[in-house]
Image (cartoon, rainbow, N blue to C red):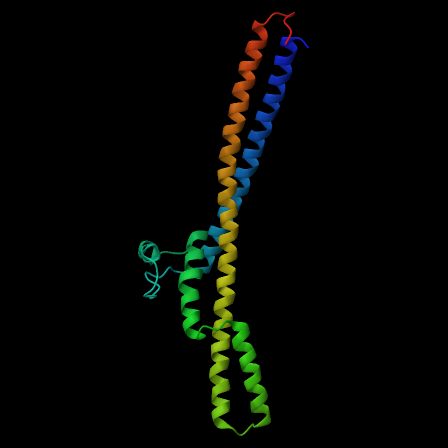
Length: 196
């Protein structure tokens, strides 16, 4: 194969790869922007104000600093949703449910209701069922909100990954285009009869 033919072929492939990477970067930018805007709009619509503290005495200093910085602001980012879900809601749910999750509390409640059905005049048991029912409802709502916020965080994080990938694609595309231009330039300088 002639050197000029090889240089032209390699440069053409490089140029095509550069264009493909730039198109991929544009699509990744669109996806990342879409994800970030959706999370921001959906969280803002919920009007959740970030607390200034979690009230967890055992939390890491970075968590304390995060809530101090973001406190009294409207939640609009996936990171805020994740911190609120993992460090505020989770901490308080542990206290409300005594360390038990909804499924455990609900199972306990069903057992107590069965006992109450067998002894409907037991006032102490009825009061215990009523109290546990309130706890089960609160923990269910808290776990549901926590799950939704963590889904928002996951979607936001995918948007962040898409944006980073977009920049890598842009840089790779630019590099391939530069190399292709250098290859075309080199192909003009070599003799038509030069072989590899």
